[in-house]
Structure formats: structure tokens, C-alpha cells
Length: 234
Image 1: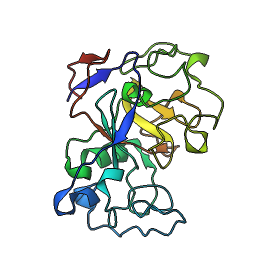
Image 2: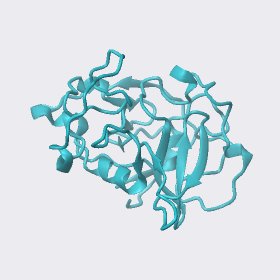
Image 3: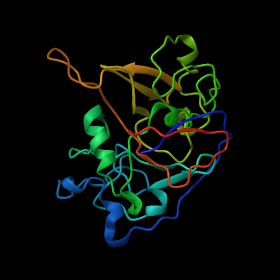
Image 4: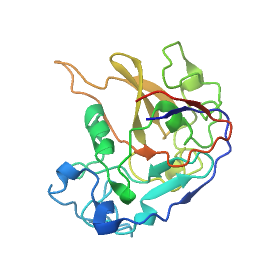
């Protein structure tokens, strides 16, 4: 599939008004459709998510609130992370990839895990790690980086709870990307402080693999607003 190397952008966005026939919006991973349902027992008013802020695959009804289109990039994002069978919203890297590739949210089946450039396009309020900022990290980047990628003050971003991502987004704010820096290191974006760094996607005999959340992405109408598009297969 097409992947994107992002340049300077001006950001805006709107919730999509996609519709999902036959309840397709309520299934993130077809092979897990019969898994034990999550129950919405949290104190918020959104029946689409559980206490961890992940998509409740059995009771999600408002498709327009589950998918969000960034009008500057044309990318469509899932507002909530998928839920694991136990209701958690964090996964080892390989499981997160599978959740995106198996997603049918908002009637679409071409969801994927975002690369680190796509995640950077979501950063709000931290100039050094926003798209076009001083941090050199990008999809395919294997060079040196330092303090310019460490982000900004924790929980002082412009969104709810001081996060540095779009105000529409919900759930755990540390997200896997599909971009590798080395064979055993993959880039992660922490929206608590707009920080970019690497972690182990697999683990080894002494350590469990790291677990983070994921926001799946698709690009139905990517807008050429200073974007450089690479025709690289995922």
C-alpha cells in the first residue's frame, strides 16, 4: 500500500459520517467477532467505549464518532483503539498489526498500522516533533537523534488531559508505529509529551514484548498539501 513521508502541514479535521452496513462497524477483527463482549461500565457517556477507552465491538453504534478524517492530510483514523479480549487497549506490536489489518470499522477493510510519519502528522502543540519539526525521525530513518525528539512538557498539550493529539482521539496515548529503526527496534509515539523513541516489538526469552496501544489508519483521499508520496509497498 502507499506510504507517506510528511512535510509541513496545517492541520484541521472533522468526524467522518461514514455508515456501516450490517453492523460492520462493530467488528474490528473478524476472527475475534465471537470473543467475550466488553461491557460499558465506565462513568462517561460514550457507549462506544469501555473503561479503557477502546472500541466496544459489541455495542458500538455511532460510526460517525468512531472514525475521524484529518482534512489536511486526507487520512482517516480510528478515534478509539481496538479492545483486546480482556477489554484492555494495549497490545504487543504483532497483535496490534493484526488488529488493524483485520479491522472493518466504518465499513472499510483497508486499515493499517500507521508509520511514524503518519503518527507525527497527529502531533499538536509541540513544534520540534510535529511534522516538519527538528526531530529527524521518519519512516525508514536509521540515523542518530537526540533531545529534539524528546517532546514537550508532560500533559501540557492542547487536548483533553494535556495530550498532544487531536481532541477527537480517546484511549491510551502511547502508540505503536509500523516503522523500524533496526531489526529489533520500532518507533513509538507518546502523545503524553509528543515524544518519539524506539522499543522492542518482539521481546526475547528474558523479557516480555512491550505493549502499547494503536490507532489504525487508512488513506482514501490523501491530499497533496506539501506531502511527498513514496510508492513503497508496506
